[in-house]
Length: 164
Image (cartoon, rainbow, N blue to C red; front, top):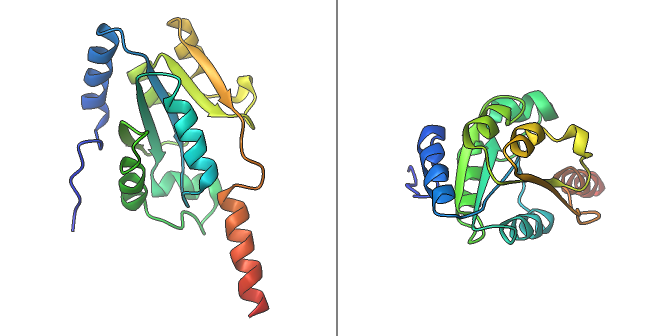
């Protein structure tokens, strides 16, 4: 069964929506990630990102992209389900899927006012920083929650399963 959700947008539709919001003086916030197993770190991060502006857009790596970045055992949750779960969050206004290793093409198309990444990323590593700053926008790094990570959850599950 396919779930229809007004928050799920293709890039061109979303680009037009962003331009409309920006013409209205709204601040558009953008972030991206795999969001494989949603956990408290993700929820706090996304809530903090949304608080920075009027609209939060989350770009989600496709399954193929996650495999290239994280290995063949990932993702745990397919992108269709990850899109649906993130779209269900009240702090998320729109979600868009991307298939490349980085969201550069998405950021270039949308040119958000604020680009958000986790505090574990250095400014130099943040893809799209130049695009956003060139337009007068800003990049914000949000503190990560120690111990809250998908990789950590997977390791704990595997450790528990080995104990029997």
